[in-house]
Length: 275
Image (tube, rainbow, N blue to C red; front, side):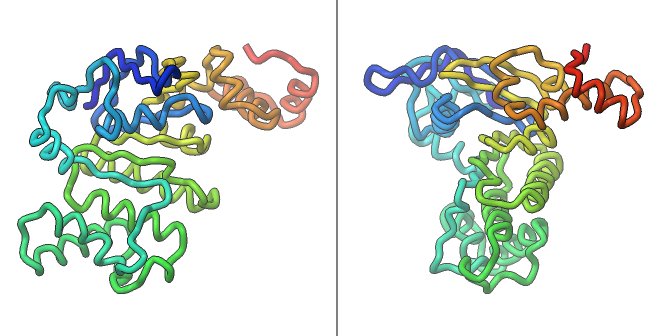
């Protein structure tokens, strides 16, 4: 569990985060969503210590990250895995070498133990046999899976993902979402995901924090979001008529209202309110 209380962060005179509090739950995919400039990236960087908040407190499983000394933070970061937006693989290293990099940095293992662990996580992300390939030789989806393998190779308690589906087609994005969800459950991690992908919100959003202009605007899950009456949230999530119609139909299904395709179309075309 990661809890943050009354986080405030500004750059010069501009306040980017203003009194933001929330709990990221263990064993769940915790999503931070919002438009560009809403503060979600700055919030994630505060959580991992890349930025220092001006005020407020961050706790990892009840232990104050804010008050930790450098040694304490270094030890904690070894329990954190990070999946970067562009995968951030080393082009001059093979898949095997990329995944092994954190082990070389932090693990007290011999070469055979490291290789065994690398093969375990590559197998887990369905990349067995890809050890000797270079990043230029694999697809965007495979690069993301290599990034996930590297992020979990140290068996972290906390996993941070920055736009994990950036640049991927919808089908591959769904594969990555499913993989992140499965790994979160399997290893009982606290997973924190920054995303613009509405498919991710609807598919794996178990605990969602919606940010608006530096404030916590709404929290809930992917089922509650359908019924939310928060105007700012609805304008962000269901921006197009197609998505608004999809929301209306999902609400009908959830409430057990049965209508054939023609009646449903008539209701939507006539602008009838779904109550």
